[in-house]
Amino acid sequence: MMEILHCTVNGKPVEVGYDLRESLLDTLRDRLGLTSVKRGCEVGECGACTVLVDGVAIDSCIYLTAWCEGKHILTVEGLQGENGELNPIQKAFIEEAAVQCGFCTPGIIMSAVEIVGSGKQYTREELRKLISGHLCRCTGYQNILNAVERAVDECHKIVGK
Amino acid sequence: MYDLTSIYRAASVADAIAALERDPQAVVIAGGSDVLIKIREGKLAGCRLVSIHGLDAELAGVKVQDSGDLDIGPLTTFHNVTFDPLIRTHVPVLGEAADMAGGPQLRAVGTIGGNVCNGVTSADTASTLMAFGAQMHVQGPDGWRVVPIDDWYKGVGKVDLRPAELLCRIVIPKANFEGWTGHYIKYAQRNAMDIATLGVSCLVKLSADKTVCEDVRLAFGVAAPTPIRSHTAEDGVRGLTVAQAAEQIGDLALQDINPRTSWRASKEFRVQLVKELSGRALLEAARKGGAQV
Image (cartoon, rainbow over all chains, first blue to last red; front, side, top):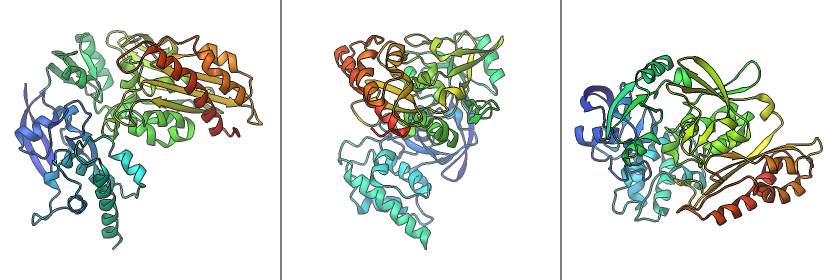
C-alpha cells in the first residue's frame, strides 16, 4: 500500500514513499531519519512523539501520514539556526537543567515551540496545563516548567527588541 | 505501522457516505485519537477505514443559525470548541468540558463528533451535550434525519447511526441555552490524560432575583453504561431555592443512575460521587448565573 507523500519537513520540501498504514511517527523516524521524534507509548499519552503539523502540536504516533499531504511539519531537527546553533528554547532547557534522560525532551520542546509561537504570556499554572500532554519520569517537571517559562520570557525579550 | 487493511480518504461528505454504502463494515475515522488507539490495541485490527479527516469546510466550525440555534460541526476539535467565541458566549460550559479531555495534543486532533459517535459513557462533552438537549443531525444515503441526544445512545459503544450514516451537525436549540448557565465536573485521578471516573454536568436557569432554580438539567457520564440525564433530580429540585436544590439534587439523582464497578472505581464510590458532585455542580452553575451562594 505504498504512496508518495509531498510535504514540507523542517522547511524543506520532501517527497517520500510511505505505506498507508504508517503513522507520521513511523515516517519521520524510519523513513526520514528524524530520531528526535521518540517512539514512546504509541497511544497518544506520553507526548514523546510530539511534532508540529501546520504549527499545531500533535502526537505523531496517532496521526496518519496519509493526512499530511501538503502540510508543514516541524521537528526538533528543524529548530537549529543556520550555523547549527541551538534555538533559544533549547538553550533554555540547558540553562535550567530541564533534561535528565532526555527521552521526553524533544516532545516538550516542540510543545514549547507552539507555546512561544502563540506570542502570549502565561502564568505558571497555565504553562503547567499546556505541557500536561507530556510524561517525564525523571525530573519531577519543575525544571521543565522553569525552562518553558524561561523560553517564553526570553523569546518575548527578543521580540520586544 | 497500524494493523489496518485499507484507508479511503473521502473528498466530501457525499463521497464518504458513498464509500460507506460500498463498504458498510468500514470504520469512520475523523481525528483518529480513538479509532487509531483501538486499532493499536487490536480491537479494530485489520479494519478498513473511511477517513473524513480534513473535511473541515463541510464539517468543522461553529455558527449561529438564523433561528438562533447553535450549530456545531462534528469535526470541530476539542481545542477549537473550547476557544470558539460563539461557544464561549453561548455555552461556555461545553468549552470547559471539551478542555478536560486528554491533553493539549489530543485536544488538537480529537473531535467533538468523535466524542459522541464512539458511544462511550465517559466522553467529556457528552454529558453537557445531553444536558443541553442537543440534536444530532445525521446524513445518510436517504438524506437527513434528526435524532434528539436522549435517543442517541443505544448501549455501550452503540449510537443511533445506521449503515452509511454520518453525524454532520450538532445543534443546540436556542431555548436550551439562552438564560442557562452550567458547570461540568470531571472526577479523575489526575488533571490531564485521564478518563473520567465520573462526569457531571449541571445547567440551571435562575429566577430574576437569582435565588430560585426555575429549571435544572443534570446529566452524567460513567453513572450508567451510556451518558444519561437524571429527570428525577431535575423534576425534584425545580422551583427550589439554590441552596435547597444543591442539598437535594444528589440524593434524587441516585434513583436514575446505574454505575458499575470497574478497575477505575467501585460502584459504591461512583454513587458517592454522584451524591456529592451533583450539588457542587449545581452551586457552581448557579454562581455563574449570578446567584450569591
